[in-house]
Length: 135
Picture 1 (cartoon, rainbow, N blue to C red):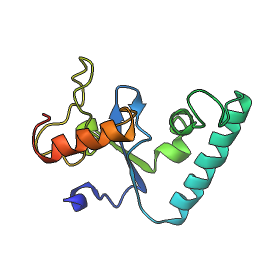
Picture 2 (picture 1 turned 90 degrees about the vertical axis):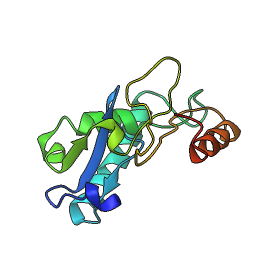
Picture 3 (picture 1 turned 180 degrees about the vertical axis):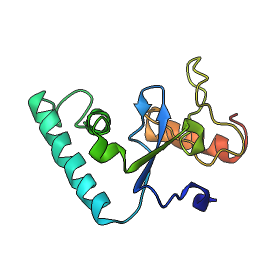
Picture 4 (picture 1 turned 60 degrees about the vertical axis):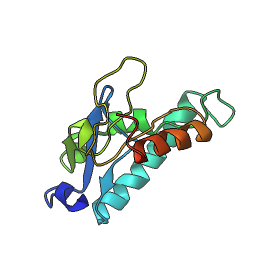
């Protein structure tokens, strides 16, 4: 159950993946620190994108959340509030292009289809997981 991840010593819980701390799936307590962290993450993310000339017309869209999170988590004032769990705790990926790290297994809490195709492809993949055909 979700409660197995709760740890009163931390304000935010992430998992690692092949890139390090993953910005795609995380859990956060509703605390003053958490609210300030979200503001900082957003503002610094916008600054990060602006500095690099990335906007909505960029081929990959407008997003800087992953890179910004990695930069913030290098600072103790942020990292000390974060608990980082192994990827499959709640961020498993489907088997994809020969990559086995973090692959979803039956019983994992959550599957994350990060960047996996169109909405139609993702819906097909979710259906396969739900029916137990994709692991």
